[in-house]
Image (tube, rainbow, N blue to C red; front, side):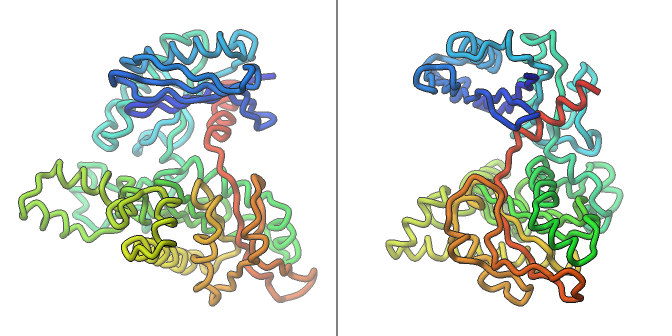
Length: 416
């Protein structure tokens, strides 16, 4: 077995998974939380421990201590990293700017370049730099690969990537649509292209995969949409930062920038507005809860704010699907993924309900059935071979797996 250790360093957490890229299996994994706080904790999951889960409470002052704790947990609860056949360490990095457009072997120059990009992602890239530096020190015998959330969207068409600002300002400050969640959008759109139902429709219609028109909705606490033509992105909802686009757990998505100036003139500081937009808006700001399950409970009890929050959430989703249908010239597959997209059947049906004019449908039984597999949840009506009539667009649920995507890219680069 050959494995990759995938690390995702957050400002106060370290998520990790030991992944077998060939089988797609997660061998072990877990999270260290509350890094830098008076008390921290770690949860390690492995089939080799008696209970499957090992929990440790300990002070974790920094990411170095966090990774040392992870290595100790592997030694204690298994599997042994010495026997795991680790070929590389894969690091999730949120922002690669215009510099990094593909997975990259890490050296000192790469670390310095990621550090230089901190102004573009001040909430995310500092932790990524720290995590990479610590891992290179403690796991110096392994190649390290950085996989960037923005890389998939690097080849966006200029018309989609360019903001209508003064061109000298955009050039000086690196302003463009970067897009985020790219690792997830790439993984999911690739899985859709290979799905038997999609292949059958393309074959029956005499079309090639290069013509497949997809809209992917990554709906978690953070949320984003992408338009993908033949495997290549042509638009995405997140922009220069992850604030733009869909309504999210704590972020508002699309917003008139004049609101920012109005709030500052009203007495809020730039820092206050930053906190408002990143941590106190979206579902949390409208309904008082950022977890969709809690918002749903509130709405079901008749809470007017929660009901409005759901309406705003769905309205924005339908708006983006319709816009991307125009960008693509139609839709062949609409795909839901991530925590909300994979698990909330009412969100899926709520989005599709008013998009029948695009040919989109929902099969209630398929939509409400629980499954961890990629699946079709629309009415199944494939094109007949030789017929000139196109099949109905498919609505799909495809579980995302960013760790597996990072592991596969890291192994390919390390071995290549």
